[in-house]
Amino acid sequence: GDAAAASTAGDLKKFESLMNIHGFDLGSRYTDLKPLGCGGNGLFFSAVDNDCDKRVAIKKIVLTDPQSVKHALCEIKIIRRLDHDNIVKVFEILGPSGSHVYIVQEYMETDLANVLEQGPILEEHARLFMCQLLRGLKYIHSANVLHRDLKPANLFINTEDLVLKIGDFSLARIVDPHCSHKGHLSEGLVTKWHRSPRLLLSPNNYTKAIDMWAAGCIFAEMLTGNTLFAGAHELGQTQLILEIPAYIRNDMTEPHKPLTQLLPGISREALDFLGQILTFSPTDRLTAEAAPSHPYMSIYSFPMDEPISSHPFRIEDEVDDILLMDETHSHVYNWERYHD
Image (cartoon, rainbow, N blue to C red; front, side, top):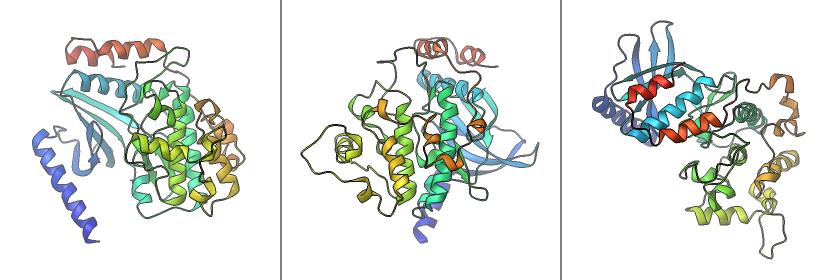
C-alpha cells in the first residue's frame, strides 16, 4: 500500500545518501546496484556480477576504528571456513580498499522477516524451515561458532524451492567448548526478543544453547506470525518468559500461561518440540544436534545428510581474536594475517 511505497522510497533515499557518503569502488565488474538494507555493521545491496551474469548480494563494511576492524576480521575468518547448504554462500572478499571491505555472497530472494510480515505461515512450511535452520545450526555449532544474532531478518529464503539459509555473521564468535569464556564475550547481542533467559540474567556467561533459544522463538513466530516474547526491556522480557511453565522446573504460586494458550491451534507434537527448546535451563534444552531427531522433526531429518564441520575452530583462534583488541598494528597487517 501507500505506507509500503513510502517506506521503500525512504529506504532508496537513505541508500542513495549512503552511496554518496561512502561510494562504491567496485569497478566495472559489479553493476546495477540495488539496496537490500542496512545491517549491524554494514550496508547490503545487490548487483549483477558481469563475470558470470548473475545477481549477487554484497555487504560493504566500513572500517571506522580498531573495534570495527576487529569485528570485520572475526566475521570474515568465520565465514571463510563455513560451507553448508543452509548457510549463505560467500563467493569473494574484496578489500580492504581504503577504509572498507566488501563481502560478495549469494543472492537470496527474501528473508523470513519479510515473509512473516504477511502473517503466520503453514505449519508444514514452518517445520520445513525449522529443519533447515537446525541443520545449518548443527553445522555452525560443530565448527565451535556461536551465531549470536539469529532472527527472522537473518534467515534468507528462496520461496520457489522453500530453501532457508542462515546469514549475517557480524556478531558471531568462536567458542571452544573445552575452555571457559566467562567475561570475554560481549553484551548487546541477539535481538532482545530472541534473547534467552541466560543472556538476560547473566549476559557474559552462555553457550550454544542461546542460539537454540532464539531458534525456538523463531519457530513460534513462524507458527503465529507474532513475536513470542515481546518485552519492552530486559526485565519485562524475563518476566514474560517466567510466565510460561515449560521453562521452569520448580512449582510457582503465580498463574502461568500454557504454551497452548500462546500458540492456539498448533499440533501437540509441535508444542512438545517447542517445550523442549524453550527451557529455562540451557542444560535441559535440546541441542542443534539432537533436535532434528525429535519425532516432530524426524520426517525431514536424514542424519547421513546433516554434515558437521571437518575443520572446527579451536581455542587458539578464539585467543587470537581477543588479542586483536589490544593490537596496534596497521589495518594491512591485520588483513594479511587472515588471508588464506
